[in-house]
Length: 229
Image 1 (cartoon, rainbow, N blue to C red):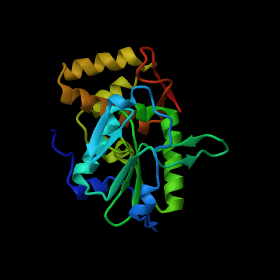
Image 2 (image 1 turned 45 degrees about the horizontal axis):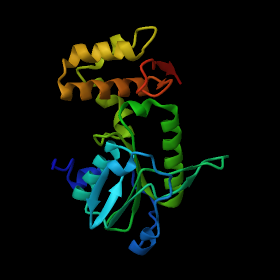
Image 3 (image 1 turned 120 degrees about the horizontal axis):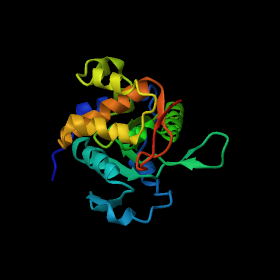
Image 4 (image 1 turned 120 degrees about the vertical axis):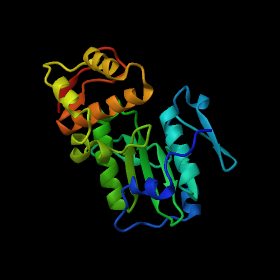
């Protein structure tokens, strides 16, 4: 088993804390039930915790769930069991993870792959998550599969200190920033070193977010490109 991501104090620092927290009991939390329609592959991604099996839509969700389960000492956890009404719509949004800490504070955590943080729909969800959590006295976070939060990606100070910053500045001088260009630069930098691949992707996303770029479609497609938001 891989070791936990962070000790509890550092994990807590990654979460937005409510100014006036609403205190939840374990009984009230237990009344939450999985509400979102599951994906067809959900049953193949699971994790056992406290004599219960939890299932997920992605390995990223499972990884973050496991980090919190093993490092955060939560009272209880749930998956996609808290409903947020979308503004001016009958549609609803289910944050990926719900975490009840030892003080009775409820945290809502949305998990996305790093490049997905550039999708407009994810930005909309994050704004909705922020507004709802602040109104209801809940903690919250949007993070990628390695636990890096949206706050990290928007921190200009961290970005400018990166040795990769000049490389990104040059890359973003191109008229069209698309999948082939991204793959070429990442390959030249990383040379199949997985740690460097992750770092390049992370700095690419940070630079794009801080300069107002979004993806025009999922990064999983072969013809995505960045556009100004």
